[in-house]
Image 1 (spheres, rainbow, N blue to C red):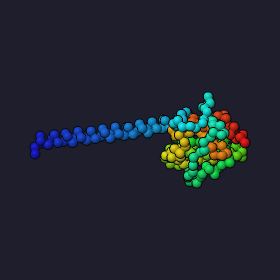
Image 2: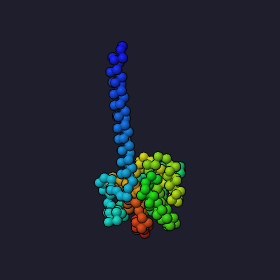
Image 3: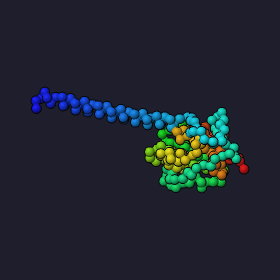
Image 4: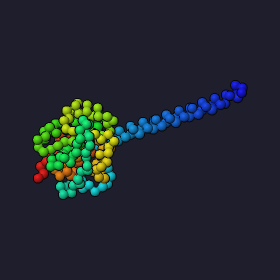
Length: 215
């Protein structure tokens, strides 16, 4: 076969290779954009309720939603391994007020509120209050443990990298994409208050104090 007759074959192979490369590049860019969009959506200073659902929440102008004592929904099963590798079941804290904080080490608003959670958790340690974190979307526990050390977080956090625990909440109760989020459980294990944004010390105490004061 002459060189002239072989030339089109090389040209076709080159065209196919170029097209394949472009397809792979487009796929990589699309995947990268999807991951970036997920992180932007998942970590912000605010959020909305995930779906309609009859939650009986009344939201104040400060963004804190509360439910009257006789109209509260029970928290779902929240158990598993902590980021420290220990077993934890939130149901074991029934009889105490529980502060559930959803966070990730990659989340800037989570860093902004961490010092307030560390401070308030220590101040209320002897007052029948238990803080529990739910760490999500950290691909390993190393970064989460470093976060706790940096901010002097001493209470345990369940490790929930794929968000399975968050999806156990009833529709409209908690938006899995609103990170950070905070829930207050009353002494019966029912959801009394909710915030879908980062909290200052003042707003955290505003959520917590009325539930602690309940008889």
